[in-house]
Image (cartoon, rainbow, N blue to C red; front, side):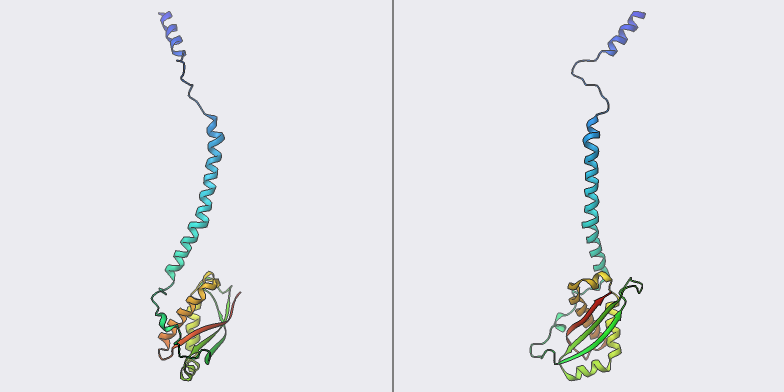
Length: 183
């Protein structure tokens, strides 16, 4: 009986040829871990640079009112109107952009080009309403929006739209920014 047990243990210890021993493979450490770290860094940069900038752009677009629906015919001047003849200036408005807690300021001066002297006098008479409309529109924008030079055309459209509600008898041809200083 003892001989059969020994034979069985001998048979168990012998392995067939061609079968490798199973165990820990060092190739996983040498190749796998650095490859994993490179992938991790790549995913981080893709997420931080591409996806977050798209999310911020979508988030700011959701907060803005729909500008696409603005009637652009109200902003564009009529061909027969003489530009620059009747320009009403609003000088040195100090505006606190949204979410800055008063730590950042925008100093701006605007000129409103109108077609007739009657409209010019109407702007002058309603100066407080005009300034309030400008401050309301520009104060609702964040610093990133106000710092973008391409966004100024959108500001012109939004201010013109707001003024059409406040002063429906005045038609603004163009808005000029003579000062635009962010600090």
